[in-house]
Length: 141
Image (cartoon, rainbow, N blue to C red; front, side, top):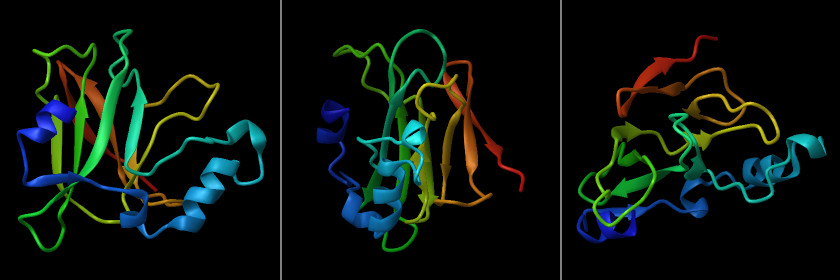
C-alpha cells in the first residue's frame, strides 16, 4: 500500500484524529465492557483480515483525497498476498463521511464481511467479495 500511496500524492492516510471519535475508539478497544469483544489495536481507518476468504491477509484503509473539500474520505482495499507487482487496489469507494469507520470481526468469531459505517449504527454497507473485487451490500436496519 505504501508503494501505491507514494505514487498517488493526492491521497493521505486518514488518522484516528481525523475521525474525531476518541470515545468510540476507546470503547471499541475496551470491548464496550466485554473483554471478549475488545479490539485492543483498533483503528477506525484501517483493517486487516482475510476479507475475500482466499487464505491470504487483505488490507483496507481509509484515505483522504486532498483534491476534494467535502466528502473526501475514500476506502481502498488491497487483496493479499502482497508483492511488488501486486499494488493495485481491488476496490475503491469515494465520498465516505468522516464518521464511516472500518469494522471486521469480532475477534475470536468467524469473520463477517468488512463493514463500513458509523459507530453503533444500523447504517453503512458491507464489502462482499466478488471476482477479485468487492460489491457493496447495504446494511438494512
